[in-house]
Amino acid sequence: MGGSAAVAVSATVVAGGLVALQAPINSKLGKAVGTFAAASVSFAIGLVVLVAITLVFGNGFGRLGEALHLPWYYLLGGVLGAVYVTTVLLSVREIGAGSVAAATIAGQLTMSVVVDRLGILGLPQRALTFPRLLGIALLALGVLLFVRD
Image (cartoon, rainbow, N blue to C red; front, side):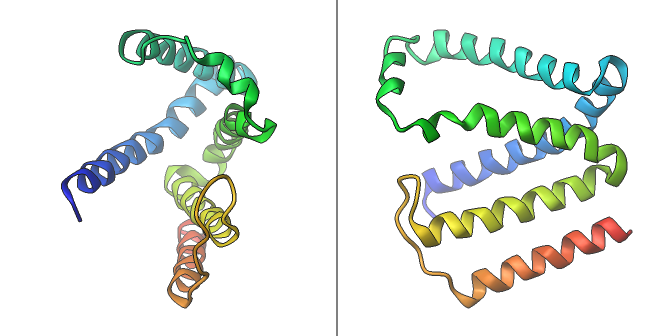
């Protein structure tokens, strides 16, 4: 693995660790202010942070109009994030942070394999191999072990 790939993997592992904290934090916020209000507050604070990052490090919003030239489904990222945050806000209370993380990773990997296999959303097509299928099956088993514990 090259240096830039190692940095990318390391940064992603750290970000994944932070996502594991997101569910219990938002759950506590949800108990205090309500589930949907908590999801809204979470996204509002995230929006403020992202706008600041965009203005300071990303050269502002000058090219925002280019988004109008993309197919509609490339604008659904925020909707998908809202579905995830709201779902996790509810499910972490029932199954715990570890089970939420396990289920999230299993869902992400399974959908990623489908996206890779079909070569959709601008990604190159990749074969559906036995090791990938085995990985999905083992993740499903891992989810079951976490949820049953």
